[in-house]
Length: 314
Image 1 (cartoon, rainbow, N blue to C red):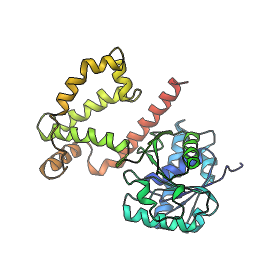
Image 2: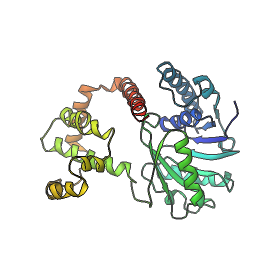
Image 3: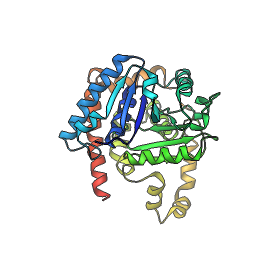
Image 4: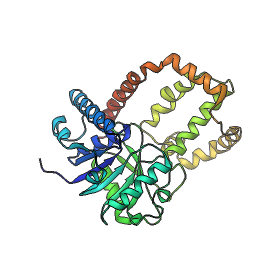
């Protein structure tokens, strides 16, 4: 099987090993590196297990078999070896700004002038990561939604100096591996996914904090209500369809939305008694010892939903 080229994945935790699977699904040679060799060894075992299960359930991405995809993924204990001859580097170390800056300084030393240096960061702006870098015009963010293999959206965030071809090549690569890239036209703290997600989390927290609903009922509003339509429609299209177009929706509901929104109150700090109570209620539903089982349950259903959406869109 001819390789399309080499991609480096730096950091082989949950996000990193998911990226490796996605790149391999399109036939790229992927080299993973982690400063803790035990983590990268464990990642290879996890990847093999997941790819074989996905194939058995007919949910495997791409046109290659699980065996062929596994042959595309290797590990190294050297960052230099990982980056060498790669045209694309996907950094996926833990969300720690100082750690990521250290990694990008090292990547800057190893990079050629044509390699793309891409971060999976969820909130750190790429301009912060690329401060004082020689190759700062090659830095970009591709932040996936977790878990990336099952949820295809990925936000692409360039800096003001990122070369246009770095943006276009990153978008094209994401499309090729089956992701849905969305582009932030400018840097903003938290980007789009987290800003939208945090707004939902904050109001859900307030509903529990103010004694309006139980944790179970708050989650049901999303899983059995809003989430049902948001699996197929975006926020604005939902509004558009819920009236005779967006202008009609605004005329009908804008005042009410504004009035309700003004009652939302301060942003919760997510600590203290309320945090303990939400944790208690969640543990009644999903005990800590069964988190991995529940994650597997989640991923299986997301994979089935992705397959359904693909079938319906054909």
